[in-house]
Length: 203
Ligand SMILES: [Zn+2]
Image (cartoon, rainbow, N blue to C red; front, side, top):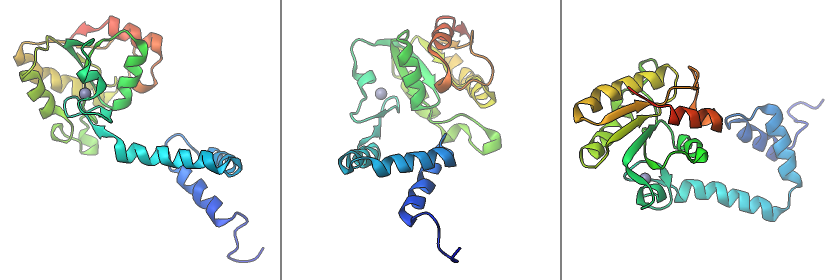
């Protein structure tokens, strides 16, 4: 074999390398995707590239709930069909997708963008907690649903929020039944998630 000559063309190995950096895409999948893209019509690739760039250029955070959106406030916050008296607190925007998919919850949301994790150096100030408190103080919320993940960080965050919110006299519930410890909301199935919302218990 000639030294310095890779059997794979440089643009191909570069795309494989970039795709491999995405979550859930191992070297084999990256390779398969790359060769799939190589065969796809150029027009389709242009649409893909545009969609990827638009995600970064057009998506902002809702100034009320911090969900990802292209209008501010987001469609959930501005909807008159939603129950304005309930707010569900989640760690990540994709958790809203999972909960909305169950169609069982019709209240508002608040996205923390993380969970408290002393081991990873994430404190209460690093996630959207102060914004949540401000929001609660100036709204008609009568129930807060703590829907952080059921892993250690999620539980710690729920306990911390419970301490902060309790003095405000708002009912606090926690997703519980059916969600095994260690569950990330995003990956919970609809049935489990629906049971967890329906069976939420006072914290
Ligand atoms: Zn919003």
